[in-house]
Image 1 (spheres, rainbow, N blue to C red):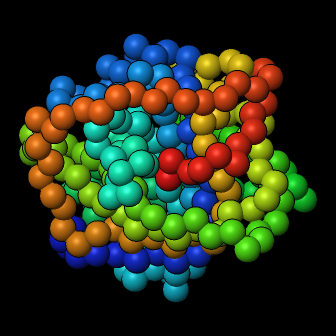
Image 2 (tube, one colour; image 1 turned 180 degrees about the vertical axis):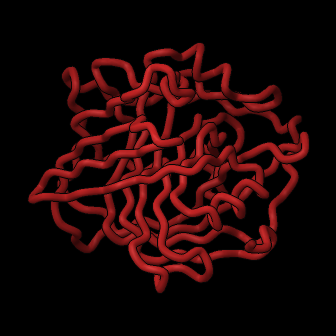
Length: 251
C-alpha cells in the first residue's frame, strides 16, 4: 500500500473537467458538512480522467478515475480566485489509488471511467460499484498553444477533521470545446443527487488529452471557522441538453 503522506505525480492524463448547476440545489447543499459553505448557485464539478500507462505515474500505475463535488465559498485555491471544492464521490479503477486516497479522506469506491473520442465527439462514462452512473458527451477540437496551470484546493473529512489539499496542475485544452449533455443513469445511486438541471448550465470546463498534476505530500488541517467571502453565482445558460464553455477554468 502506498504511504498517503508521500506525494504522487501523474502526467499526460486524458481529462474531461467541467462544472454545472444542479437540478436539486437543496440536495447538493445537504452533502456539504457543517463548517463549509456551498456557493449560492450550488455549483457541482466533475473530473473524469484516464491514465493509460504506468509510465505516466510516480507510483499509481495505470488507472481511471472520476471525482465529483460541490464548489465552496471562502476556501479558494492559492490564486484567491479558483473556488475550493468538497469531494462527494471518488470512483477509481485502482485498488492502490483507492487505498491511498481513502487514507486522505476521499469518499472512494471502485469503478472505472472510459473516455472515447471519435472525430470531434467525446463520450465519457463512469461505472461505480458495477453500475453505469454518469455519461457525458462533448464536442472537441485539437490542442493548440494554450496552457492552463494553477492549483486546485479539495477538502475531505478524516477522523472527524476537515482536511485541505492543494493540487498543482498543468493542462493543454482543446479548442473548440462544448459540453452537449450530462446524463446521470442510475436514480438509485448516491451520485444522482448531483445531476444537472435542464437546460444545462456550464460555468466552466475543458477537455485536455494531456493534463499533469500532483497529489501533495501530506495534508493540512483546515480551520472550520474560516470566514466566507461573497458568493459569485456566475454561469451561462444554453439551450436544453446543450452547453458551451471556454470560460476560465474553475479547475
